[in-house]
Image (cartoon, rainbow, N blue to C red; front, side, top):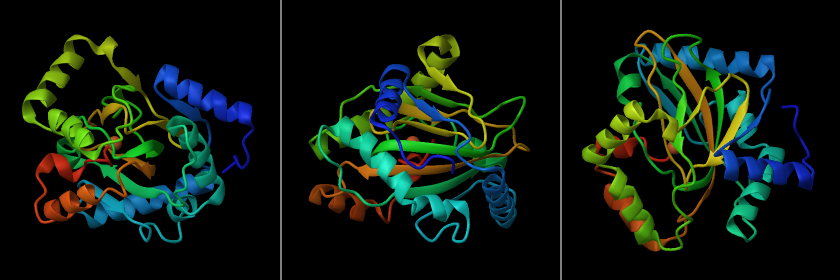
Length: 253
Ligand SMILES: [Fe+2]
């Protein structure tokens, strides 16, 4: 990656863009070689999944590829830490990124699209790996910065429950159809890095055609309620029960 150190002014300009425009971009984050390596991983993963939707998560996913390299990059983690610390008004001490490689294609890819949600992590960063060039381009859609960082896990849960139901999801899709200008729509380019407040922004991706492929490397930083004992109990009780819309929560971007 061409970026290693960032001046205070650069960090501030990234935060200003996230606050004012809903997102910030670092162009050409990935080199051609890195992009090629990830495209090879995507092709292999999609073929293994029967040319359907697949998501690889966790620290071991993508071992030996730039996915693993970035997730463990001190420069990348430090960049996220500095941005998030300013948003939280206090130093973030998290030392890791949560990574996912999402590959959307086929029926599964369409089912996993247009699901509006809030992430559990303060900062969401996305590096597109494969994006359709024409037709349905799988753009990122958002209503930026719609909620504050909740200090209380129960309020966070309420925010999520208010969105995670068929009625509200349909209403949001109808609103996008009739009032698309109300949404921030980002046509993402492979290799660039996009960042936004995933926790605060209601977001989803637009679908791609059945025979098209949309793959993104997603890195989340700072789980707001990661230390909440109630959050832990809820996660454990949900671990054996995952309704369709909760399977992609916090990762769909
Ligand atoms: Fe997300």
